[in-house]
Amino acid sequence: MTINPFIRALSLAGFDKFAARQGLDPTHMLRCASLPPASLRRPEDILSFRRYCELLELCQQSSSNALFGLEYGLYQGIDVFGDIFYLIHNTRTVGDALFELRTHYGFYNGAAQIGLDVVDGMALLSYRAGEQAVPGLPQAEELACGVGLRLMRTLAGGDWQPKAVLLRHPPLGDESAYRRALDITPTFAAPHTGLLFDASVLALPLSLADETLHQLMAEHLSGMERLAADEMPGYIRQLLRNLLPSGRATIERVADCMAINPRTLQRRLAQEGTSFQRLLDETRQGMVHNYLKIPSISMTHVAQLLGYADVSTFSRAFNRWFGMSPLECQKQLGLRRQPFLLQSRLNDRQKLTSTIR
Image (cartoon, rainbow, N blue to C red):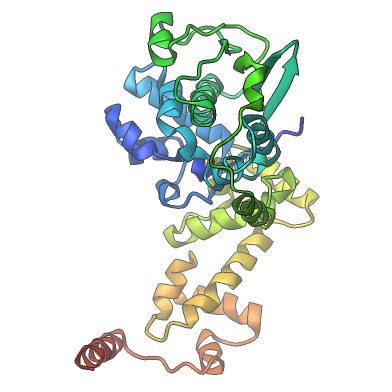
């Protein structure tokens, strides 16, 4: 299985509310795990799977709740699937839905795989991470079981119960706590992590199936990129867009967000035929034109948004990229610069005129 370090920030669905219920400060916990708090508002963001597992481990330690991951997964339920849920819920049967989940899971989680196997009349819905020595992975695996249980109860009925809940690791807390959370005591130190159930459930029809909606969602997902290992340059560009305004877009900071060594990052980018500096320049070039289209924005502010210490450094870089100054570029775009106060007054006047009309 190809090791892939990426997951979507959708994996943090409901984290702020659940962490607060556990007596934790969600923003503080995210920062402790080197994850950007803004990702709570941007479910499409790409995060390090290692950092995600570290977050769950830190939350478990800080809350003294050994089953933090499991209870968080039960709390998240189907919300963690985003658009995938609408795809799988509009199939014909429970088995079709789980097949779609297995097929499309890579759009949101490139660090793990969903399995669906049937042997001797029993079905196993399993979860397996590509990296098996990640601190906090047991919390992530229990979270996946909690989510899987909620999903199956949504598909097969609220009273649905698996024959067994399998966990690869020893108990993280008292076994009675597991039974209270799951209504069943898990089988620990199992070969797989997942849910074992009667395969006849796979044939159950889904009453709300809508073939047209299913097709629309399939087309929507086909336009998304899977979280593949060779998408590292795209991941870094996204990180840079988030980090540049804070002035922290260094290779050390980016490598830390990815939980890898800066030299390893440079080596992997070289294998992709690029470099950190090239990605940094390309990201800044892509951002700067949007900023320059705002007549009232100051060059000082643009420089700050792009992570430069001063205007002169920004202007030299801009001239190197495009062979002209930022002001010349604005003129070519047909924009006349306006003081911010004047622009605000013009906007207020336009609003007043619109109201009178």
